[in-house]
Length: 253
Image (cartoon, rainbow, N blue to C red; front, side, top):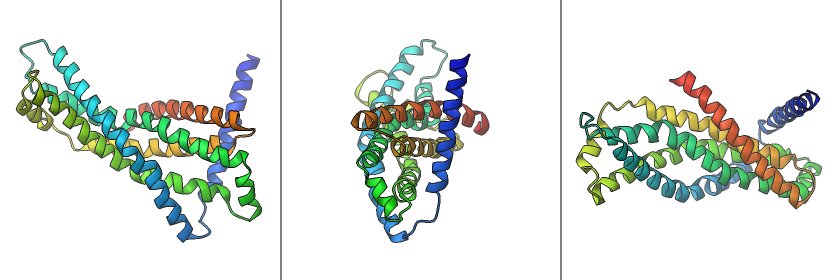
């Protein structure tokens, strides 16, 4: 019981420090020109550099979903266009938002945490504070802004390439007809599912960027602690994304 109380207290204290850090982050930048320059750099580093992995994973996952759907449809009473419809629903509702967010938590989250953590242990953040710069705002706000504003593009790319991956299975194999797949993509389509996925991704991007920044900003020690902070950031971000996914699904659907 005592260990449980210590665990709860430590996590509440950590959450309090997280909220206090966000208070320092969300303030008016000292120089907007510097902020926008850093914002563009972060968009390229966190967003544009992630397009390749999003494209690659999505196209293969779309193909796998289509194959597995076809393999599990054994009843002759189920129309063949169901393959396209189920592939579309799986990609739109869950994969392109939640699963891609988990992947980005590993790639982007660890990058943010290790970058800021290295600056902390090498005393670069202390130097900014001595010069009178709000280091939290200067370092973290551009990262949050960049990831939150660019992640809808990554989600759309993931949706598009995932559906193309399913189509390629029908085009280059005899598992199902591509025309039936395309018809399934159009059948009973609900536009809100696209917006649902994008809305979820905005919350996930905020979680990834803020949690990773918190663990990097508050790290103490040396290279070992920076590595541990990166791991903790990915784990906490992933768990938070899954919990938030349940909550947002309940609210939005």
